[in-house]
Length: 245
Image 1 (tube, rainbow, N blue to C red):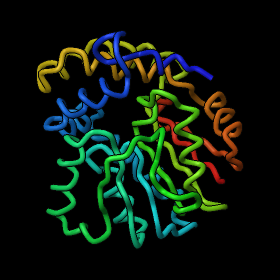
Image 2 (image 1 turned 180 degrees about the vertical axis):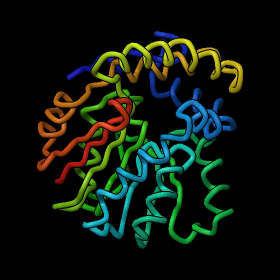
Image 3 (image 1 turned 45 degrees about the vertical axis):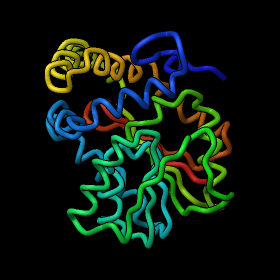
């Protein structure tokens, strides 16, 4: 099935989305962490922690963090869950280079490693990981269904998928306030700080187009996941999905 966010591209409707997304994140990588935490007023750290805590009862030992970016989610997961091994996978070498530096500085290089992977064609064998996570990244996938099937494939039986995504708040007045923030403040701050005039217009556009709530739950179930649980954070600005293979 085709989804609206799959047709949204950062720079031009010509060419492949994957290549444009890779180029965009390579470009904004040096300022990404600063902008991410600033634009969310630091609340994103709490969202990450709440989501990661849902995996505690399952004690995953081998983890894969898809669309890992600069590794913020991977680092927090490693500190909280203490897996034996956590692989951060992404198509953007620029983002992962920032992540590798951060991991080295805090001494987690024995636990966390980074690998360039295309989510459409993961190179890992079937049933490899106890948990697969994806935070603020799957709305950038060119083919959501295929990527979710790949994530399902590399999970062990009874393994867990944890997805965290930005979303449109469903109710007044937060819905209207967040629209103004996403369409005026985010693009302006993104352009001034990152120097990319289109990246922070693209990101809220994909956020608004991405399937949310019950719709996303249905997509996960169609992929083959069961026991799908989801929860909104902070008036619905962020949504967490936890599902079992």
